[in-house]
Length: 338
Image 1: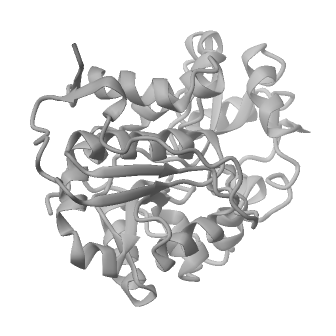
Image 2 (image 1 turned 30 degrees about the vertical axis):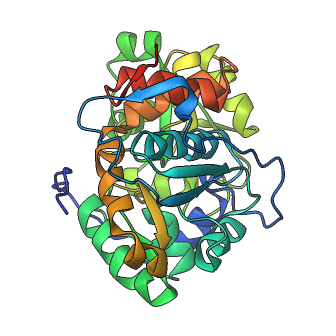
C-alpha cells in the first residue's frame, strides 16, 4: 500500500502524562458504551442517484457485500454514509448501519462481523484498545504500529487518511491577524505578555495532567485567566471574543462556523488521531479489494476537508446522505445520474 503522508520532523514523547486518559475522553471518539440506536439503511446498489466517475470502477466490487458502520457523533455519521455510498459506486452491495453508541460497541460489531467497515482513529486504537501510554508523534509510524499490533485482536487497519482529529487551541481570525499568534508557542508568548488573557477549556481537560496542566508545562505557560466551559460553548464564546484562546477538536465543524483559526501544535504535545477505515482480519482476507478501493477516498479526506464536511452537518444541519452525495461529486468520484 502506498502511504501518501509525509513524516513529521519533530517528535516528542509524553512520558508519564497518562495519554490513555486523554484518548478516553476525546470527544471525537465517543467512548461511552451503549447499544445501537437510530441505525439507518441505505445503498443496496442504488448509489443515491450517482454514477461512478474518475478512477472508480463500477464493476470493481460487483457482488461484494459491505455493511458500513459508525460511532454516534457527526463526523462518524458522515464517514459511515460516505463509505457506503462510495463503495456502492464500485458495485458493492452496501448497507449503512450507523450511529452505534460507544467506540467499543462499534468495534465489537466489526470483530463479530455484524458490520464490515467503520472509521477508527490511530490514537484511539493505540492508546485505548492496545493499552499504550506513549503515543508516537509521526502519523505513518503511529499508523504502522497500531496496524501491526491490532492484528492480534482480529482487526485490520486499511488505508491511512491525512485528517487528524486531535486537540488544539483556536483563536478568532481577527485575533490572529491583530496579534500574529499562529502556534501554541505564540500563544504561550502572548499569555506571558498578557497574563489576564482568557483561556477557555473543558472542566475535565483543565484538571488532567495530559490536558491543560501538561500542555502548560510543555509550553511554559504560567499565567492566563483560565475558564472552564462546556465543549460546545467554547466554540461560540471564542468566536464571540469572550475567550482569547479556546480548546477545540481539529476537525470540528464549529471551527469554520465561528471563523476560528486553529493554532499549530509546534511542540507536538497532543497525540495523533488520523482516520483509518478498519475491518476484521477475516473479512479483509475474503475481500481484500474493498480496502484497496477505499484508498483514494481515504487519501482525499484531509483535515480541511473533514472540517468542511463537519461544518455541513454540525453547523448547517445537512443530512449525512446529502453531504456524502455532494462530496463524492465534488471530489470527482461520481457524477449525478441523468
